[in-house]
Image 1 (cartoon, rainbow, N blue to C red):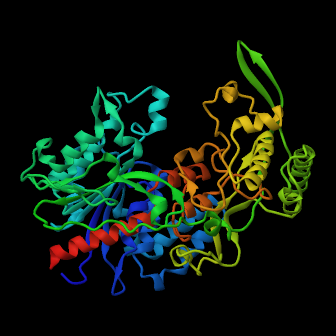
Image 2: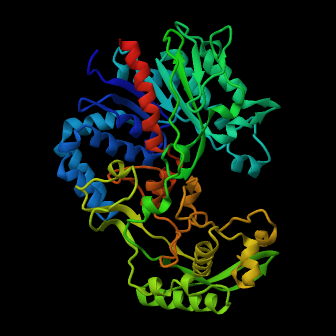
Image 3: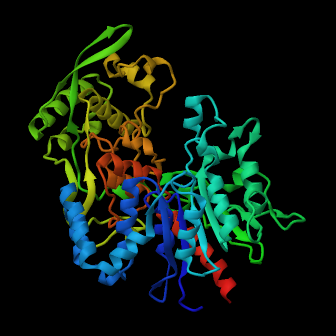
Length: 533
């Protein structure tokens, strides 16, 4: 079986973070893993998967120039046309990519089990040693989701979508599976029962839930902690549920992303896996995004007045003229006011940086190949691009730009981002015009990502506003771009996110960090090599 690629089926694939990590393992110049089928319901994420699948159909050295022309296109409509031409020029690779990235909603009436099973069988083409990866939708388990609804609703279908993942394990019996989910899974309960306990039990014996033509059991391992031993059934024993929690920042991922990741090995495979190698020092955010072209924020609207109508606040807005001159004037005015408080000194003053001419960026920004300064340089960079894609700043409410400027100056001086009580202490005008501003519920509403150490978790909320993802540089005074968020998530620079900017943010926030997946893939490769031997 030498040089035979290991097939992968990727469920709930998102934009392909898990798959990218596994696809990046090479042996003798050839990819070790081969994604045969990626299933994703979101249209934009599925398109992203499709283009990345096309990219993987070529060796690194012979990716066609037309692919890079797609990355360099600044107009979204024209970019989609270029992708169509790209697939037409390379029909074999294009067809394979379209077959691999399947837009389908698992667990829905439109895509019954029989239809899904047929696609999986066709993709595997008789292979019995293969890998299943994926992360069933996790909103219902997340801390934020549960706090909004007061707990988990047993009627929420997302709670049970993992059972579609489980059903596929029972029916198709992969050699190994990797399942990812949010930290909240460990504490989630439905009707008083711990969700994690019954998920773990189900995964160890899938056929107890779903009858299959033949049954197989699995041993489920942590990737961060060695088992204390094994029980009578041969299952690994762990002292704490949190042993299954992966702290990404310990594994060269520049963000504090904490996720549950389960590694299942079919019981006939007598291999105890190794665990991930942790690092003592976190990667610094500045070393990950500091080389990207500097951008200014866009000027959006400003609030003229606020009045109450039927007991509810209604704002009257004015659209600001968005150009460099007006932006510089606005920033200078805010900067002068902040400096007049007498709290910050000249070292904290971003006036010089803020006065220079900065653009808004775009879907492609022409620049020299960025020069990243960390161990993942080779992971991120691709000299063939000739710039950077998905790097465009957002427009912000003018009053929020003032808050961003204050927050980044404050963070630079005090080495932490300010809470809302700090905003109130300096100026009542800094507080947002929300009734909840003084409630204490959203104390960290404006969060500066600090330059030294790992960033906080990039989530899908970044698609709604940038308040939790303020750039540390006061001279830029803005939230992070899609590419900066993608760097934090460890997506390579030649990984293009399709769809609108909001859709791009959403994809990045929902993804598994590819470099973490790469390290998991190294462990899985060793397991499956022992099976082949």
